[in-house]
Image: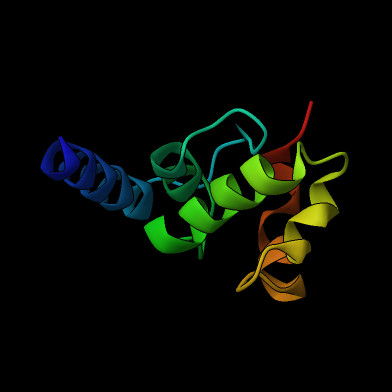
Length: 86
C-alpha cells in the first residue's frame, strides 16, 4: 500500500510540474493533493501540513501555513491565491 501511495504521489508531482497550481483546501486535502496543487511543496512538506493539521486542528487562515516547519513566507506568498481553508 505504501508503494502505491508513493507512486500516486510521484505521479501527482510529475503532473503538477507540467500544469500550474490549482486551489487546494489544506484542511481537507491529503499530502498528495497538496503536493500536486502547490508550487514548491513536495510530498514531505505536504505531509508536514497534514501532520500539523492533525496535531493542532484546522487552519483558520491561509497564512497560518507558515506555522508548519519548513514552510516560510516566500512559499506562502507564491501560493496564497491557491490555498483554501474553508
